[in-house]
Every structure is written in structure tokens, then in C-alpha cells.
Amino acid sequence: MSSVRLYTPELLALAVELSTWPPLENAALHGEARSPTCGSTLAMDVSLDGNGAIGRLGMRVRACAIGQASAAIFARHAPGRDADRLTTDLRLLEAWVEGEGAEPEWPDLALIDAARAYPARHGAILLPWRAALAALSSTPDAG
Image (cartoon, rainbow, N blue to C red):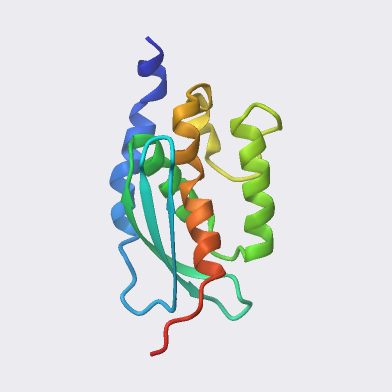
């Protein structure tokens, strides 16, 4: 019964939306994250805007439906956010998934709210924020 509530048509539609953000061929920054609880992975390519924030991003997502939905939600709203903002967002998101804080100000999180009741899915929810921060702290590729 709770799986019906968890896997809504809106959540599952987000997985299809991931095709909007294919890997970037010439991105200078790359980061990866892996969920230790479920093994889901996300590799992210990032190009910066003129202010040092995310301008464009591309992803390779190998995750459950929750991880895929989280990645799509992240990608929809990440452009314009820098490492400092994402660090704060991640901290707030970690507290939220654990039930120790209010829902962060990140649009569309309501679509994955039901997954907070499944601790094994928390790592998948956090993947895109962790991969983005890994990318933003990586050494730019030459060329």
C-alpha cells in the first residue's frame, strides 16, 4: 500500500525527464556520488556561468526511481546555484530526509516527500547534491 503512494505517476515521469540532461561533452567539471545503502550512482558534468555558479549540467544516473526523480528535481532548479548555496541546501536536505528539519526551499521536493519514510532511499535522494558539490570542487579538465 505505501509503495503505491511512493511511486506516483508524477514521480515516475521524472525518470523520463532525465533525457533533458545528457552528459556534457565539453564540461570542465565532473563529480560523482554513490549511495552506500542502495548502490545508486550519479555522475555529473558541470559548466559554470559567469558568476561561478552552475550554468549547465549533464548527468549519468544509475539509480532507483527515487534517485532518478531526485536528479530531475535537482537539474530543474540547479542552474544559478553556487557551491556555497548547494552546501547549505544539502545540509538542509539531509535534516529534512531524516525528519529533523523543515522542507528546504527547493521547488518540487513534494514529489519525493513520501520517500523520506524509507531510510534506504535517503542516499538516493541526496545523490545529485553530493555529485554537484563534488563537481564544483573538482579540478577543471584542461581543454
